[in-house]
Length: 147
Image (cartoon, rainbow, N blue to C red; front, side, top):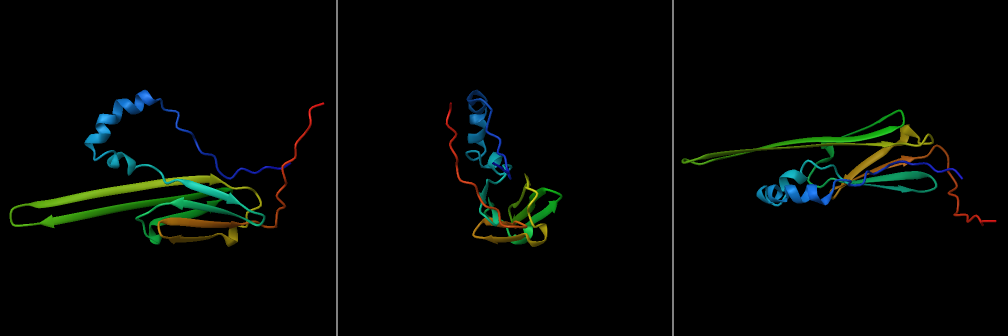
């Protein structure tokens, strides 16, 4: 039985003591919003007979904010977003900057047709279609008896 892995996700191995230690700091920075802005978006991968579909949750971005490339068997999705807001009044000037960036890389199986990869962005979801070179028959689960 052949199995191909397109993505692996690391589990959070930091102990709760570590999280509890930084909890007061999270509350100081608007309930952790400051720290959450540096996180990478979640990725889902769905496999079918003739393609893989990668979906990435990235609300608040524009389609031009993404850089998507396939290099060998590595799919890399990245984004950099910088905003500057300035508010002036006769008594004060307020200037705020925000910067967010992420990079996600996934290993692709050998049977991806790299010339026909397509991406769409709608309602905060980036969807990448990765067609296979040939249709693959997904094997059904087989139970092996113990003798």
